Image (cartoon, rainbow, N blue to C red; front, side, top):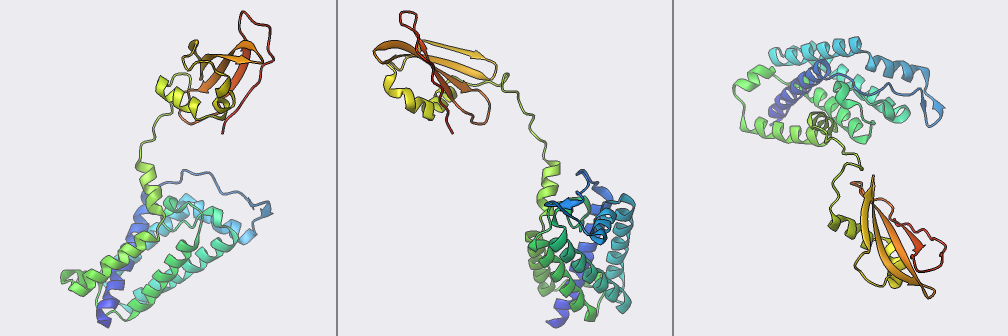
Length: 281
């Protein structure tokens, strides 16, 4: 059982190192550089240099190549020096992630290149610690990764699947990768967006502007409906202070809900009435 656990860690670490190498070599940064201040406090010089090195493309490629070579070495040899180098690498990564978590979480850890640009959180630190523990456990593994793959015991396959699932659960990079491949929907300007009348009436009837004037409206049948740019205007007959008026509602045609406005204007047969404006959530 102990041997199966040790061999599983060799496969897991090799897979993680190769995935990190692939991410660093193929996924480029698209976010702007991290600021030199966090919440108005200057970033310490050593952490500023650390995050600057992470954003350096040459450094990223070099680190990715090193991780790839280490991952391949885990697959082809069981030499202790390779296992020790892997343990030291993950221990150093854990220290770096912990420092970033405390002092500069906004810079991202860069664990998987540009995919790790999001804020460093507890999951990132926990993941790095678990990989370090796995590297320590793998020190006594008797076989190289390729030898394990040639004849994968059921125990190794099951443990590897469970550990990969845990790794996925602790990896915010998957959401970032999915977002990069998702084609963004082009935003339609509100003045050109189709806004059906049922949508307009639904927004109107749910608004506080309608609730304010509902009791003064004489009929639910509008006198006039027209559209100008990002607004659809709906006019209703009403009566205020024994005067016939028109209550005009301006309903936004944008995709997201906006403020519904209202105004009370005098009808042609009545004296002027001072307009009143209403808004909704």
